Image 1 (cartoon, rainbow, N blue to C red):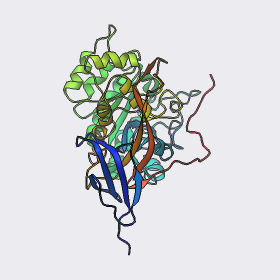
Image 2 (cartoon, rainbow, N blue to C red; image 1 turned 90 degrees about the vertical axis):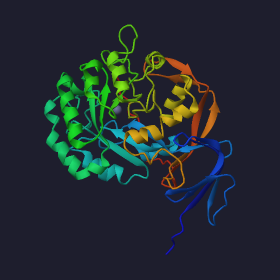
Image 3 (cartoon, rainbow, N blue to C red; image 1 turned 30 degrees about the vertical axis):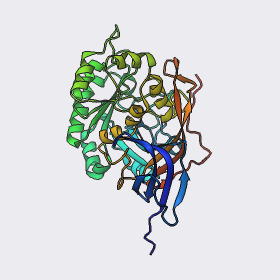
Length: 397
Ligand SMILES: [Zn+2]
């Protein structure tokens, strides 16, 4: 029986690993699912495949903290396996696409067969996002009927899939909850505590307001859409000051997630909030069928926006690798070290960014941008494919 690992030598790249502080030119040797070595002029094992990485950034496979990857099962879902190989994202955290009624299909039909890593947060709503959420001709949110917030069903999910579910998600905004948001906040808190997982709450147009939301988030929980401009859901008050409720949340260790989305990222809000100390813990896309063709596009495009906002490359990379990995309780991901997992992404650093567009159609131009040229998950080079299906969905008004 052949027990030799599949060797892959990535030669001469600029390796940046924010978790260990590495930023230097070196070789990276992968032995199947594990990193074998990092160093100069490594020996080539017999049968190794060699990849020339000169003039290339070699970084941990990216972790996108906020995505929607339940394609086929929800209207908004996109196909991670098709898109990951074009963006360097090897870990897709799915934020509440599935609820207790639909997570079994997600796990069996999408997550387990994937060549990438998809980590689900389960929705407080029994039905999850289905094909109604985001359907502009129906526009029925998953918690317009509060009876879908069923804690017994979530206990069943914990028993059946506990090890695979990394958190509980509540979309606490008018489009998802109608007027029910304020009464659902304590239920979400209780459900997350009973499941023993972090609570992620999205904010947007009220109700509930962000001031009503924040007291329900504790250390290790996650606030997403932190730079959204929506009425009642914005981190800034009417005169542009960071709200005291948000500052208190930062101080007690609530994790701050970008979740760009179609309508949830404003350069003007981000600039004012960052000036007042609200930096993201995770830079993420909220990638779904309505924003993949703009303004989100992909994670490297959202990273380019933070480079344009003045964040340096290492700090941006940290927020798409080790930091989101540890937020979802998977600290072994998003890092490059001997003995660790062999998820790797190669990028070419391009001068300039072209116009970068936010949710309010405002633009900025950055110093450079990142073009993904190779993506490796579990030691395997993953390639995109054409299945004849468009990931974007467009509605006529
Ligand atoms: Zn989302």
